[in-house]
Length: 77
Image (cartoon, rainbow, N blue to C red; front, side, top):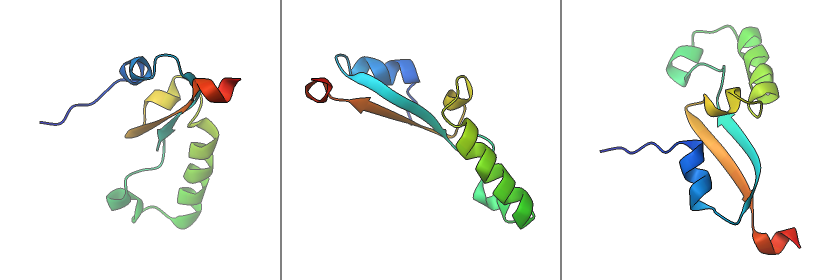
């Protein structure tokens, strides 16, 4: 069985840490099996858009994967 964790659940695992960034990977770029049929210039535009919006709420929670970067309490001093 596969268990998918929400961003909130991930944040609970890192209590005491500061969340630096949350990014979705990817947001608007289609999966590889579909993107091979997308013209190159459109795919490049989608990748640029993806980089621009991947860290913007609520889009940063909509990707196939979510990258949560946290900062250790010792690094905060």
